[in-house]
Image (tube, rainbow, N blue to C red; front, top):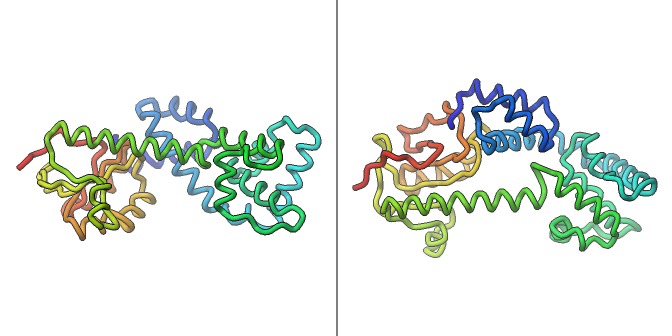
Length: 276
């Protein structure tokens, strides 16, 4: 469902006042019952990521890293079974999986060891059983499964949801007998930057000709939409002509301002298409 900018800002204000926990999502749903859970979760995640980006640097100073590591050591010495890292993350207001990454990197450098590679760190975060310390492995696991906005579990869920909506869109196109080339087919032809679907025969939506469709399993806020325009949409427009972007979880109405230039926004596949 598209939201006015005022409606979006009201939700964003409430999001800023609640902690980044799954319980807070229930609070949001109670406050905004007309909005879907998926829309609220997307807005919740996007707003939280903005906060994390603003505060990221201060949590990665040498002083902060050492303080978090010593706090971890003290905590597990007192009670190894308690969620030391998760409680630390909640206390300092940083994503649990990112706190876990900081402490894990510091642990792997214990004794003057080399700086661990990102590949190694990512592998251990995806599978904490690889961490050579059982207590730390358990602490990292607790952070990963309790983080609702960051971490490998969230990344996996987002990827699955994105793929699910691409499949849904493909099924709709097939059902409506719209001929298309999918992204993997376009990559095989040598295209480096492509939308999800190129229509072999254009369609018309609300009087606008559509040559391509991009699926976004998220809410279209100003920040993300601006980035997508710069990195993707205008490139598609320049190469393939006008197109349609579907934000399945809604978008800010005022962002649908480039129709005359060739980029249309919808929150579902339009039912009133005109085929040639």
